[in-house]
Length: 163
Image (cartoon, rainbow, N blue to C red; front, side, top):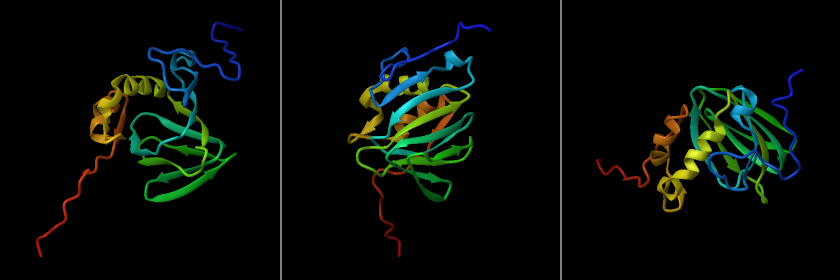
């Protein structure tokens, strides 16, 4: 049995990447580690993740601690520790922090690639923010390279004054 892809990580260990990620995104299995099949991250959901769709990957979330809000299509769900959700490709969804401390989850993307997207996103730095918040219009050029699309909403709604 080939063991060239065997990995065992200690409690706080992560897989190295092209760009260091914040501690909230602990990469446990990179896309290269799984021959492209999936990527696995342990994530602390400290900020809401805006509504988006994965065009090529299914996303799986297993809640380790805390409570996570999951918006899927036009429905809202609450996932607590021990719960699992499959977010199939092509269906819009968003993730929200409900608990304090933030929920901690295992996130699997299949096929892999999620960590590559995060590397590109964090490499872009504050250029993807508007007033300190992730701006879908600024994220989308980066996300598009990874088969992800965020819903863009106007940042300043203008009331309709036509009668």
